[in-house]
Image (cartoon, rainbow, N blue to C red; front, side, top):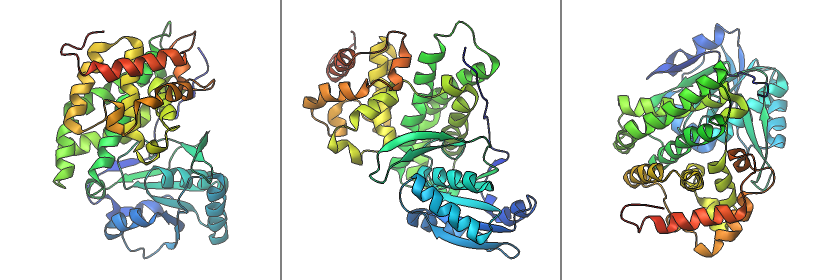
Length: 364
């Protein structure tokens, strides 16, 4: 087994209504006196009314540039250095927070994150997904230090678009499907991998048990126990899978299918988690787990997650191109088995999936 580096959790995490009321106090106890506040337009509109007015801390507000690039990280790092900031506070979705993590790392100052969306585990993890100026992903950057302070105000998240929460549920379901296919191949589990495996299973269990009720709560703009359970599963439990499992707790087939779908122009406007959710089903077909495909498909129907290409607005003429893109040499789908996965296998799985929903008993 390869070396595993555990980056399990932020230094401090709180999810509570009113958690931002004591933000200044929590900053001061960390010897933070000057902060650069980085937000997006929409995220600041969502969080502004919950944000306290500082009395002892000096702050400078900078708007995020719109993409998580190395250039944007350097721009924000320069702002932080010029202001002599002790910390950067990131308020926003995953790309805002990933950019803040990178900028704070460049400055070697503290990272404080306040998510405005429950769309993925970005608030939890000490890594950034880097894009170029055209919006294409280029690589991951993993940092040696964890988030210093992660604060979740549920009232911000419950007022976010419900579609974002549904996509977050789809993305989090993949934690189990992808970790399972990788970890189940290991001859033995170390304790960090065991934690990753168990928390990945917990991701699926919590989504299937509480996801529908959480979406109902979000639709009605009510902070309920089910809503908080799902939010914490997406952000915290989801983040723990990779945090403890390292390369054994990250991505496999579902995310490669997501990447394959990006070759289709119509896919660019589709939420990440929705494409991953479709990728889960393709991976399960590749594994021959048709009972799981049926189980997940029934759950998708309740939430409106995509089960077929037409649900994504993608024509079947794209199947071969999607398959080729899915199995590029460095794609994580090849972690599913030692021999790797071929484009023909992926295309066959997609076509099987397309026809499966017309089969009453869903048999191979």
